[in-house]
Image (cartoon, rainbow, N blue to C red; front, side, top):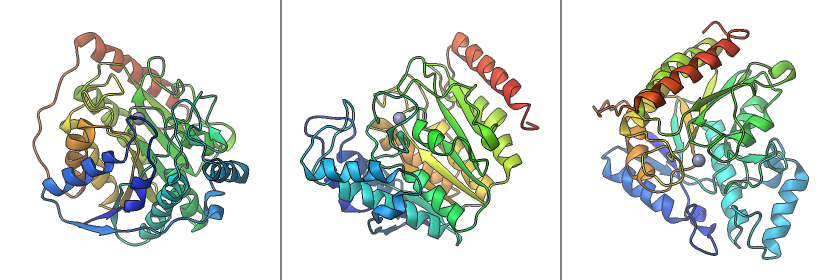
Length: 343
Ligand SMILES: [Zn+2]
């Protein structure tokens, strides 16, 4: 049975004007999951303490968010809004991450339907030179990974399949060899945040453990199939993580709204079934992006496969030049990774 972590507090982070990252996203997600016929157990997290965030964020950044919310500031940057309920929502989303870390000690598949999302939030806010925080406040997956390390784990892998690069997660763990971060995203040349190139491989002891699988705009399910089988699965198998976390964004879904990728149910079901295969159903998944159709169709396909329900979906093919470009990207990335991995 899938454990879904959810709280009405997540709805209290409200935009001051129409915005894609809105509370209704979670209503779409919950409705889609209920409609899928899967069995769930809903649990409600407690808010994290500010100190819990210091494992991933600089205390001055956490204090800044608290101060800005208290003073009624409406915009953190041109993409990322604040509202009176933002701090409580963001602390509760981080609380869900702490629950996930605890739950992973047992035998559990956990899906955190939390918001605000987190993977663009770096140590001190905007990460790696990004102009904004891309709707994110605290980095939930990073809080979970950092807690797992504190609990004694030596190898944690994060697979980020949101269509945007998880620049915050990359920045926080850039020199940490204990964390393998594999990020599949649309070419940063055409999409926010403008980082996540294959040459960003980590530094110091962490060199080789940060992996950026770029997909060309217009890429569909066949491009994902290639990236998953050629790069993601072999790396995770070789790394042998003690815990596998997902930054789960559904904005690569065709016509979800914010990206140029064309994934369908096939891709998300394949990722779900890979997650199940790699972890024997012991994994924690954190919601990142996904704004409309991705949540409605991609999320239930992913969750069903994660629970072992194998459904048949048609695989969409990319235009030939796009597929060829993806093949080149895979080839180039593997050439870079050969220094560190058997592949
Ligand atoms: Zn995204």
